[in-house]
Image (cartoon, rainbow, N blue to C red; front, side, top):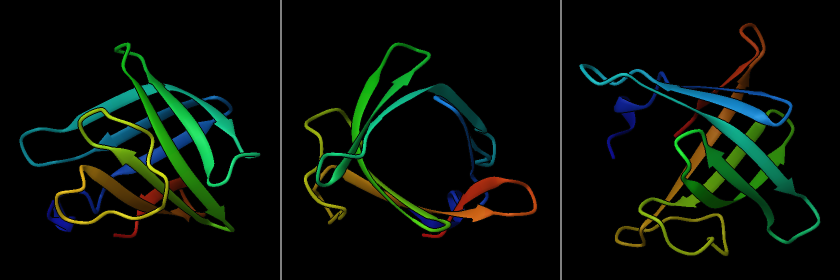
Length: 108
């Protein structure tokens, strides 16, 4: 997907809850849900339960102010590595903490 469509997305995580705003022209989206993380797995895992009822099995890596998340775009199994290649059906998003707004913004 073109990076410019998501460059202004904002992710806010508070405890086990999150809100993701994606201000796409003519189609702004807001997704809310809860997170359940398991940092003991390798790679680290999180299950995202959207308020709509959908559950997405993801992997993540948090390094300082950088959060990488890899997930299946249209359902499917949890990824095994933080990578996405054309046709893989996986999305890799890298967020950077915005200290001023206390939100995370996509880097790529």
